[in-house]
Image 1 (cartoon, rainbow, N blue to C red):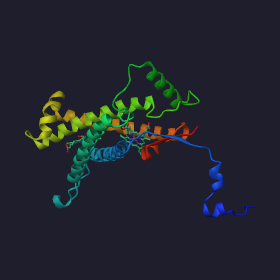
Image 2: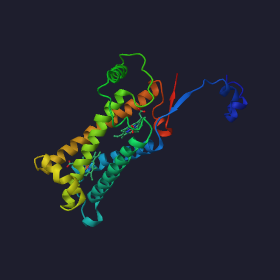
Image 3: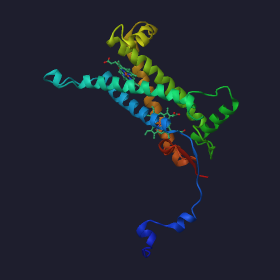
Image 4: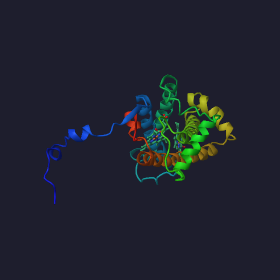
Length: 243
Ligand code: HEM
Ligand code: HEM
């Protein structure tokens, strides 16, 4: 038997329920530039991974006039444009680490020498492995996430920027800024063989794909099972605590 509908059922307004709702506490963590950078960066990496994959395994050529079917040309153009976006955005993000709040530099600095840091990494690892029934509450990134973000994201991304612009500078030729700043020293580092640079640039993509899969899994898992908000924190900036 369905109950007779109250005004709250009809309008959705229920002041009584709101008055008795528990208070939720929240802390402002990620400032607007950090949030904007996160989503621009996630989009740039997605575009780079898709176009990069096709640069490595090109589509079959289409019959007809090449200039009317410039598919791989556009693919490379979009890859290079997204590459510039990725690099400039990371520079802006690094600047914000100096002028933003204290959570803004968590991505760049790891307190590797502090025992308390490693204690929390172990605690978080145990929680992820279902060996601990309850996680701690973290305001910024949890210490385990910082480890993944530094090694699984930041270092690989810097490597992708250096090798990407080194390959780009080969096409842009000697005298171009990319050749001077990257090609001149990156290609010799790989024994002067640009095919080796292609291979490592390609492998780096799979490193970032693995990071992204684990990262999105962990963000959604923590949102559901953890003691604080996650995905909405990267949208609104506020971390809300469930208990
Ligand atoms: C649907 C896709 C994504 C979701 C839902 C998501 C979610 C999040 C969340 C919730 C955080 C904050 C975690 C915390 O508070 O500890 C975060 C941070 C971060 N995410 Fe993502 N993310 C996504 C895609 C990506 C991708 C594709 C990358 C790069 C490969 C990425 C790289 C990062 C980095 C580097 C941070 C640290 C931000 C900083 O400290 O500036 N994310 N992400
Ligand atoms: C997360 C970032 C990036 C990813 C995932 C990515 C991915 C890839 C992949 C998979 C390839 C094909 C490699 C091969 O098999 O030969 C490639 C090629 C290339 N990428 Fe990237 N890349 C990234 C960043 C960059 C950046 C920042 C630049 C700088 C402009 C760049 C420039 C290039 C160039 C010039 C090529 C060779 C194009 C060609 O030979 O036609 N990439 N990229």
